[in-house]
Image 1 (cartoon, rainbow, N blue to C red):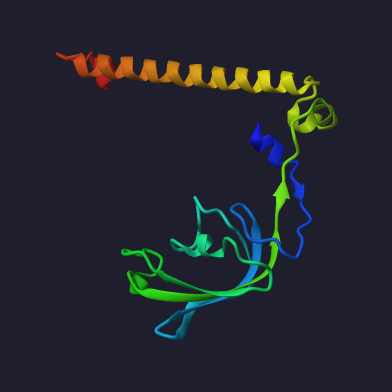
Image 2 (image 1 turned 30 degrees about the vertical axis):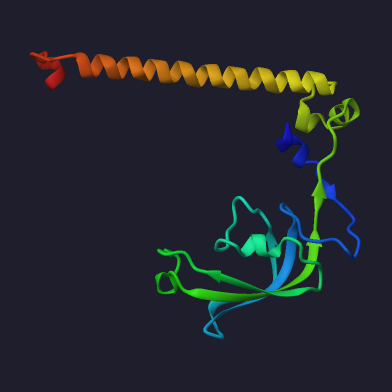
Length: 178
């Protein structure tokens, strides 16, 4: 249900005191420095980045360091590259300072699931569904059917595995060998 509602999410007007929150998209400039010197690949201008604390594409602590910043604010993030660091092994375990300036903060808000929303968006909720409760029931039914189908497949696979592991073969018919 949340994924369907996210398709209808719209931008929220933020005042000048708004701060970065988990889930926001920020446009920012940043410069990464090792021992006070900028390093290759560690800087960007007007980089658009979605702040997702649980699933960051930056090194640990980067996104969390942005939370609470305001547009126009600059901050140094004192971080350490993970060890090992597969993207750039030569940076593994090294201390780094990212100087980050937030250019803008964008936030979207998903609408509330209502009967009107469902009827106005048949391409998302289904052309045969006309109420929020009917959509909830359809999602529940779909999830249950998917779960049951997955369990049936697991059961069949386990049975075949047992049959194969428990069987011994004394000979093969000549036709099958060929």
